[in-house]
Length: 178
Image (cartoon, rainbow, N blue to C red; front, side, top):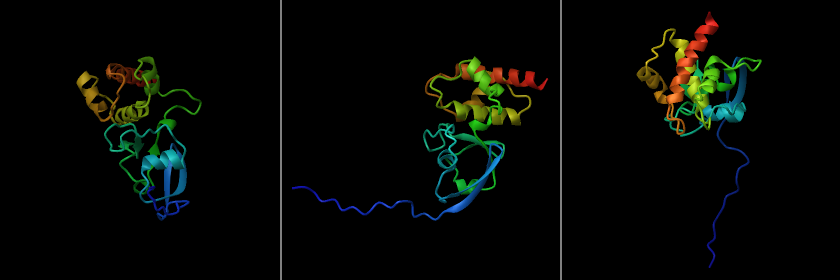
């Protein structure tokens, strides 16, 4: 005998209330309506269409969703969009120059083969960017670099080339500053 499953009609949209969220993302001010439960990572990806911010673990462990929030690296999967209201957000899409010239960190990742599948790369780039912008004279020892990168997980590379890319980033950024 077949089992009857009672189904309710599927709503066309969430019944969550919507609130306006205004952010400055990669230099452009945007306002959208969002559920108070919407994660910042989902807001960035689904409301703004900026899919370079990846979602891996949704627990803040892997670092794939790292963006800068008011100049500091932050996990966008651990914040609600409404919590970021009024903040300045920078995503991987805002790192390269408008003409497509790669940022020195992106260039170094490419030169040093600091990526394989690339899924974790935006998070690494954003973490490195935040740290290097905050730290004018970074410690380039292996231990110090690995500490900086410890909030990001990569399942492909073994980190050796990411560490090389970190050092190369500093070289390229210093050369650009001269």
